[in-house]
Length: 181
Image (tube, rainbow, N blue to C red):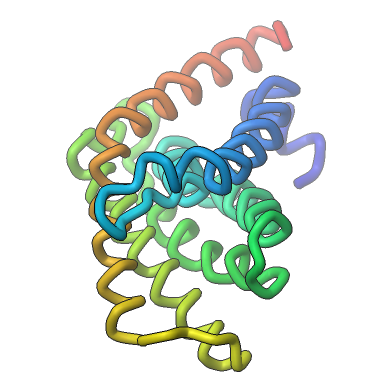
């Protein structure tokens, strides 16, 4: 994104958030997510933050978060480089396309459902990419089931994370408009 877009939409703080949060989510995905797994379901933290931000701030910024978080996740994991980033982009963009306007944010439950849908779509796309590239997937139905369970978990976490994304968007817009950052 050009600096004019960043300055118009929230300034330097928004740019820094767009780097730090996706990278942190990717790092936590590789370190903390396995520890908080419930059964075989792990939350997809990069999708959680990118989709939440996409719903709160729009698809343009959300896909940036998805790309950066996905690429960092790919570098940390043993999967093919760029696969998770590629799988993340369409669902995160899709959930951020709905524009309710600044006065009418997406309700929290609807936002959490959208995040869950983005997580299931990204997970299924990722499984498809693995299958096409010849990466080992022990069982496609089992992988798809784990993806759905993980998406439910991710959507549940969005009940807490999406409101934070809405708050961050409002704060950075106000501070960017005032020239504080």
